[in-house]
Amino acid sequence: GDDSYYSMYPYNVPIIYFLEKAYSWAKNNSQYPYNGEFIWIQMNNAFIAMAGFVSCITVKRLVKKVFPTIVVLCLYVGCVVFSPWKIIPYTDMMAIAFPIICICLYIYSLTSVRKGWKYAFFGFACLAAAIGGLVKSSVYIMVIAIVITEIILLLKDWKGLWKGFLLK
Image (cartoon, rainbow, N blue to C red; front, side, top):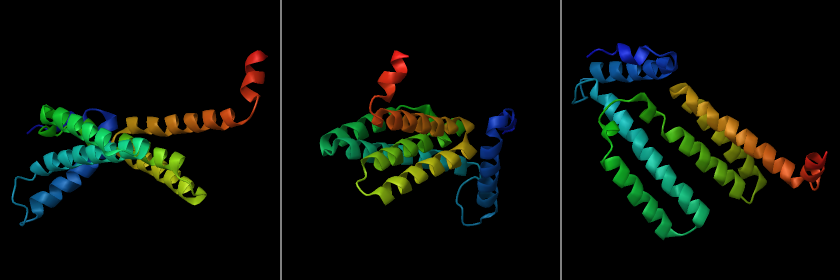
């Protein structure tokens, strides 16, 4: 088909590079049983599944109960079932998991008891955003959101700083 759509926009260039590598691998691999372009749909569905899984473990970490996690899973599966994007190689769907992974890892960093894990999860959240930014540059917004949240939490911990700042 005509794949010029994907390279029409500059923010698609990194993902097109990865898709081309996957396509070349699938096309040249005699063990791959499908048309080479089908690997894009498989990658698309892998990212969609990863986003659902990470959403569930994020909810489980926040509420520490199984029932809300099952509700989230059912809602996610219900939305995915009716989504046409699981069978269309749409580049935004390939980046969907990365903001969710960032949020999950950031929540893990906030809720970790040990200081070493807090920093590790925070670093992994930023790393996930950086990798996701290679897939789709809009994922970099997650790094900005995490930094702003950290600044607000830092300022909130300084007693009276906000009150003094707002009164001046």
